[in-house]
Each structure stands twice: as C-alpha cells, then as structure tokens.
Amino acid sequence: MSYQDALLPSDEHNKKLESHVHPSDYRNPAPADRYNLVVIGAGTAGLVTAAGAAGMGAKVALVERGLMGGDCLNVGCVPSKGIISAAKAAAAVKTAKEFGVIVPEGTRVNFGKAMERMRRLRSDISPHDSVKRFSDLGIDVFLGQASFVDSQHIQVGDQKLRFKKAVICSGARASAPPIPGLNDVPYLTNETLFSLTELPKRFGVIGAGPIGCEMAQTFARFGSKVYMVGSSHGVLPKEDREAGGIVAEALRKDGVTILSDGKDLQVSQAADGIHLKVDSVEHGYDVVVDQILVAVGRAPNIEGMNLETVGVEYSKKGVKINDTFQTTNPQIYAAGDICSPYQFTHAADFMARAVIRNALFKGKAKHSQLVIPWCTYTSPEVAQVGITTEQADKEGIAIDTFTLPLSGVDRAILEGETDGFARVHVKKGSDKILGATIVASHAGDMIGTFSMAMTQNIGLGAVANVIHPYPTQGEVVRKLGDLYNRTKLTPMVKKLFNKWLSWTR
Image 1 (cartoon, rainbow, N blue to C red):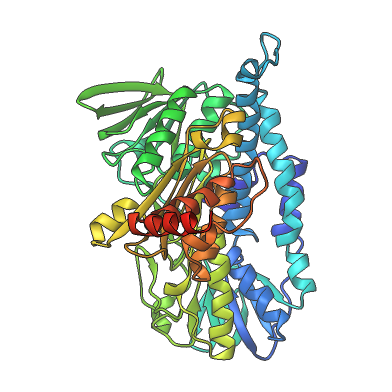
Image 2 (cartoon, rainbow, N blue to C red):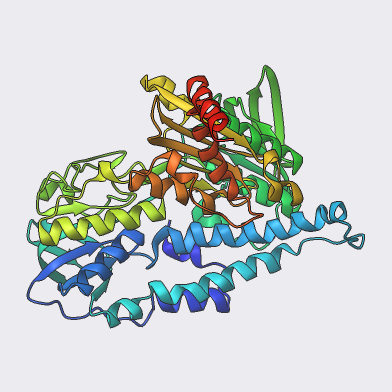
C-alpha cells in the first residue's frame, strides 16, 4: 500500500497533514561527513531516538520512506481515538434519558462530519511530528527508502550516509491472515479505514483483539450493523478472561453481533454484498456486509533495507535483538514494533530512550526491565500491566489476588459505570505487585499507579497510603491496598490488639 492511501480524501485537512509529514516540495539535505546515529523510520521509536540523541549533541540523520509520525499519527492511535471519542458522544445521546436528559427524536450521527473532525484534529497534531520540527532540532531528515550498503553506510536515493551506529525503527504494518476468498474482495485495514467518508450500513470486523473490539463498538455506535468474527479464544483473548467477558457484553449492548468462536471463515463477493460464512458455537452463519475491516495480523517492515548484507537477522516477527536492543550486527540497534512483541506507542517511546543510552553512551538498559502497561479503548476500557491470572496459572507463579468491583466505588455508582473491576496480583505471601487489571471508563488513566509501583518496587500495602480525591473512580486503586492490609490483621494480631485496647481503657 502506498502512503498516499492514508491521505484520502484529498481535503484541506489531509493536505495540511501531508505538508507536515511528507511535504511534496521537500529536498533532502547534503549528508554530513559522518553521523553518530542514522535512524531508519520516523514513527514513535524513530522520532524519540532522533530527537533525544540530537538533544544530547549527537549528529543524527533520520530516514523515512512514508509519512513522518508513522502508524500512531497517521493510521493508528490518533485517528482511532478521534473517532472513538465521536462514537462515545453518540452513545451518550442514546443513554441520555437515563440521566433525565430528553433528546429529540430522530437525532442521528453525521458520519462524514465525525470523520472530518478526526482528520482536522490529526492535522492539528501533525506539526509535532513534522519534517520542519525535526529539521529545526538539527536533525538531517531524508525522505526515501533506506538501504544498508555495509556496516558503515546507508543509501537513500543517490545519497550515501556514513554512520557510526544505526537504529532500525521501521515498524510494522497490517497483514491479512490466509482466509479463503479474502484476496478476492475489497477489504479495509487500519491503513485505509480512516479514509472512509460514508458509513457502511453493514460492517464486518475480522478479529476480536483490541483494534477489532474498538472499531466494532465505534461503528455500531455510529449506526452500522456490525458483525465481529473472533476465534475460539474469545473477545480480547490476551486479556484477563473476566475483563474480556465484560467487554463482550458491552459490545452486544451496543448492537454488535459477536461470532466469537469463528471457525472455517470464508469470504466471497455476491451481488448483495460481501458474504462472511462462518461456524460459531455449533451454528452456521452466512452474513452479508458492505465493508470488511481486517483487524488481525501484523508484518514487520523489513523490505528494501538489505539487512542480509550487514548480517542483521530477522523473521516474520521482525528484527532479532538481544536484551540491550542490539541486532545481530553490534553496530546496529532496533526499537519499536520492528522488534518488540509490545507494539504500543508508549513501548516504542521507552525502548527508544534505552537505545540512546546504549548506542551512544555504552549503557546497558534492558528490554526485559521495561514495565509496559497497555489499554484497549473500548467502553469500558481494559488496562493491564504485568501478569494476568491466566498467565500466572500457565507459568506456575504462586500469587495472591485481590479484586474489587466498581459497584463498590461511589463515583462509579453515581456515573452509572459499575460494569468493571480492579484486580491486582501479588507474589504469594508478600505485597510485591506482579500484575494488575482495571476495567473502567478511564482504566488507561488509572493503571499508571500500578505501573509506577512495579517500576519503583512499591508494595501493595504502601499503595493504600496514597490519598485520592473523593469521589473518584481512582479510589479503587487505594481500596485494593486496603484489601491487602486487612489480610495482615490475623486472628493472633487481632487478639493482641484487643488485649492492648482493654488495658488502655
């Protein structure tokens, strides 16, 4: 797919976006004699690496063949959250009467306006990732395909860049699974979804992971009849099972038909639309849709870089790195989606920070030491850090688990958002936090407390000492600490307390 596909329709907002992230009149600079660092790819990992290294005085070149900002700005986090917010507004209108708000009959979503809003906001954000901004930081920005010549040189067009160290941050892209008939019909991925200007009346989503769930719920709230085809692993299969169940029920309430045990999926084109034939829970389905979103499958962007020439090993999962982010060529590092199972913007950000230390200053920052939370932005959100119950069982890790439903949190009750919980796992017999799950409307904002505690080795007992404003849903975090501290009040301790208090009456 050409990067221009992400810039449709060709309206004022996308023209503004293009002027920042791949200006048509841009001319590559004359290369320096030698660079401390050449960074390939201007997504999050590449931008953070380049800016951070330049800020420390390094001479840096940044090479991008597509759009500055990568997936996150152009076809990922930014546009998806833009339309999710619009869909939340639509959902609020539908449930307004529960709060005593009367909405006129016939109120509907203007899909075209919602998508235009997203494009406008995306273009407003784009200067932060622009060619101009990074050029102003003293970085030599080259637009074009980067290809290794040897362990000291990278070719970009007819120019050769000499480097001491290089960092591969070329990311990953959507890759459709081998579904019978899929290649014979038009389908969308995250790279083309955000160019839609008309709402599909019938919308098929293949994949029940984060992207699939987020977009299934969003398009259902916009007014599409949505069918989401998952696998035998269910909705959000990598998350806490109870969390996945709550999200599944929320999707159903929004009108999504979930075929979560999808087997033997076949796709075909007919006069009445695109047919999805699938078996689910021992029933055969043949549903007809107008558009399909393939929301499963990723492939690393390794083409054209000539990695074999410089001894950089890779597979279908991406570039191989050691724990200090070095590839199999010690002069070349990698960060972000090209090399990590954690394909999140914030993970790429912190991997890049580690690479700067390691590549330029002989640091030993390790990938394995990163505590990486993540969040699925459905309603409710699901946020996770560390292990889940299922992982602990599978890996034989002995844990104690504390769970508090949102029905025990006053703010959640007042806002009608009690379908959720917070759960934390600690090492058995201690308060060392090994993982946490939060299912709530703003779970992504709340999980940071547990991430900080794990990073700074703060125990669950100490978390209970942090005072939260009342009433907030964030109180659930403190309440989990209270649950742990109550376990220390053993019968023997309680007996001793009773004796002491009787003596001091």
